[in-house]
Length: 605
Image (tube, rainbow, N blue to C red; front, side, top):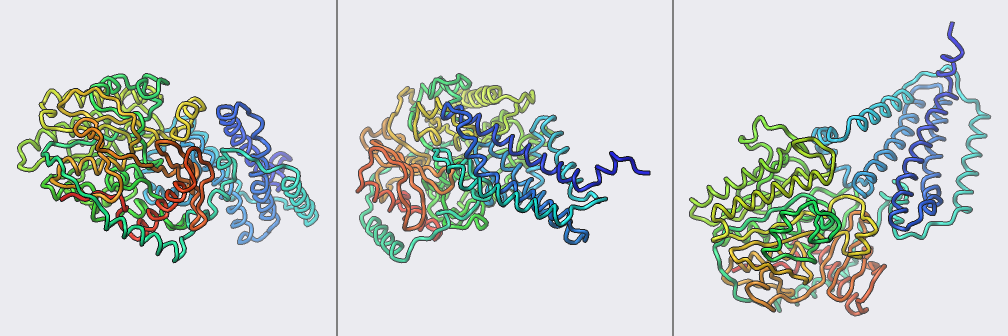
């Protein structure tokens, strides 16, 4: 005979109570996270709670209603799909909460499509989380699976359903009319996960009239392009991209932390840039900016249509392809799995002759970490040897190195310590040793080394960083250049990852032509006064329909929305300049969607 306690566990009341407890627990976790962020940003914790209730209550109560309806259905063909739908909604809510807590952004369909395309890599990446986090995750999944498939001994009556439905309608009405809509700068963090993924201005196309006008502006600019003499050097050129290296890691660039002291000291011996910006919030967008000269990547596409490296396939005038025409051997080295986001395929598409990732035979037997990578120190030894071997080649070398060990979540590749500080001290030691090895091997007799980051780390922007750097905080990254000359010069002019391409083309070409302002990171050393000012752009990761615009005398944020695109925040930029910047964003997005290089791309001859 079944005991009362066992009978209760098979009742609809027990299952509905368990599911509602999960919903409440998830809501409390998200509210706790957001109030903690509010404390950092607004010095006000509880003031964010009404906004979270207003955003999430309708979504969560509807999930509870769907689950109760499912329990009332005696037929499994009705009950099981409805239960699965409610549980799937809760899992999406929890996944969004996890993404927010780990990466300071929201769960979006484009990101899901990219990451779920390689589930085995994602699963391996999850092992970097702590044991207790994995155990909690597994327990949640098992519990939700039980709620989905558990057979019932009792079911709710029609009256129960009526009472529950009326209660939900009353709660949603009170939520809608009694709680005011939040008016917060970080409203993007409060919206529920469904609203975050609604079509926004990103997918809204420009009208035929706007397209025609932008085409005419681009044609006029092409007819008025300027050419100048290049340096026509044959130096070995290496770009070292340190994953997630950010200004707040450095005492020299920010004064907040002293986690990269050796890199700071090396930067002081070369050209170092205090206002250098990334094009986007992730590695792919950083690579697009550096290797194609595009300030930002914001395709005119619906979220479910976005592909990895969208708008950057099939380009003719890329950095590896252009520099290859000058007789260079072009290579890209990393230790990550290049199948992820089709990175290896894309690198070959833009013109790299040699592309190497985790499959390199010299890495056999070495323990793997993020994205199947080996520790940075091992990658950089491989890069050092590759550079040395190229000395015997008739052709000069252009090499891009992308490190991986400092990818989030921050786990030291040797000790497995979970500490951001420990990881970046490791990056500092590995990269500085690599640079010292290059110097000892005579690299700087005829070599140029650019050291920078792919993007600011995917961590919370604390108040002190926002106060120190303002709108620049989300995109500002360290960058320095070492050559044979010990310059020790700090450059305070505004620069961007996209300026690397015209700099290197001017360095290796006899002549370089450009439609926009002349840009050359080496000009302060070699040709003072040559570089002309321009505004730079950064596609935001927290608000996917917004672009930060940073100019010498002001800054602003644009919300893209086709012809209705507009500045929603602006300081120091006059209305005529605002219109010109809106045109520049429209022109870039239209050209990118057509598979064309940005209008500002430099061309070598």
